[in-house]
Image 1 (tube, rainbow, N blue to C red):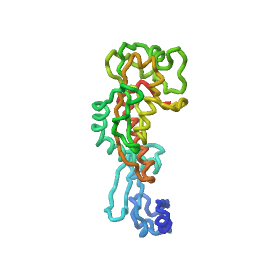
Image 2: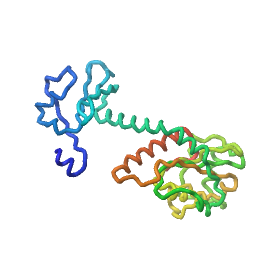
Image 3: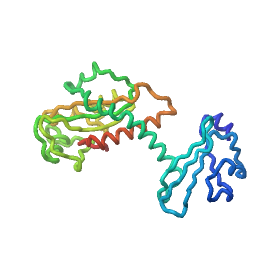
Image 4: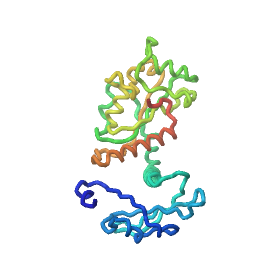
Length: 273
């Protein structure tokens, strides 16, 4: 198994049941001896130990008995009903993501709230913008109405219909439950998104060539709304270089968490399909 992991450059996880001698006691490396697994070639050995299995909600120890070149450590986790080992590991992974996001959150909000770019020309907007095609990050579109929009139905009339009152197809819909009266000359969060190519994605939202996309704002088609509102956008770049292929899934997951947190805080008017 060790040779397989090295040759294919993948992680191999082996599960084993410990001997009955370990019942009631915190497991140690000695308990692996009778399982047929050679712990000497393992890079990482984990044990789950429920110290009091008769008490609901008791603490579960995630014991890292072996971590190559590291000392043994113990993490205490609260065991919920029917919570399994994979859920415990997943929770730890999410905590790592959350810790990282919290460390850069103020910086994200600063860029989103203080570095807005006004959309003056739908066709020439990107001549001077400094964004590479490999920029991974999140973006926000903001709306500043020139008139009061007090009712949800009024927003639909100017968002979903063109000059001839025909329905504009394939556009993200407005959240009815999130709608609040839009005050004149006040900036509101309109839309929140993420992308692995910020330049292209923002271009698509402003002036989209693909007419049947359900994920783009396509502001150039909303002439009715553009007459009564000014749009701005801002963004935060997580990285301006394409990550290694094996890191892309993790990076995309990180973007999804940041996007979700931004939506929760900024409460955009328009939702994703």
